[in-house]
Image 1 (cartoon, rainbow, N blue to C red):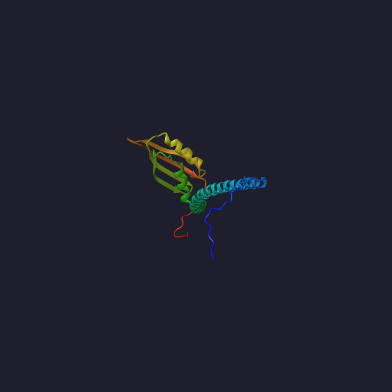
Image 2: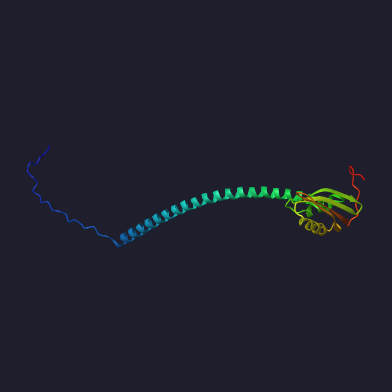
Length: 193
């Protein structure tokens, strides 16, 4: 059987006392430590992230610089190779110069003695034994003594004397008599005397 009570319960409702939340010191210490650690981790993450960006940018700059230096290194190697080639050519020329004999040395001495301004040109060069006759023209007569001094300074000629000098309309013709310090050597034909 079922009983139903239709009357309101006659009990008094009593309110239970509300406890105020208490903050413990340990909880506050743990919270402060947690916040400090979280802030430290956040700062550390930000610092590392900025360092990564900075180092990545530096790495890219260094890669560009390395590529530029490699290109310069290749260019320097190319220039060194060209320098070595030129030095070997100069060495061959110097060796040939040292081994020159006879008419080649005579011509070199005469060519080195000529003024560079083109005011003097040669028309004839004769060699008989140790006597050499040099003939030519000049636009300015004062160039002839300079030419004679230069010839004497080469060390190839023992004496340099003016034989003749004739004034013409535009230029002066001259001839010089020179005496070589070296005995003439016979010219080689096809590598044989």
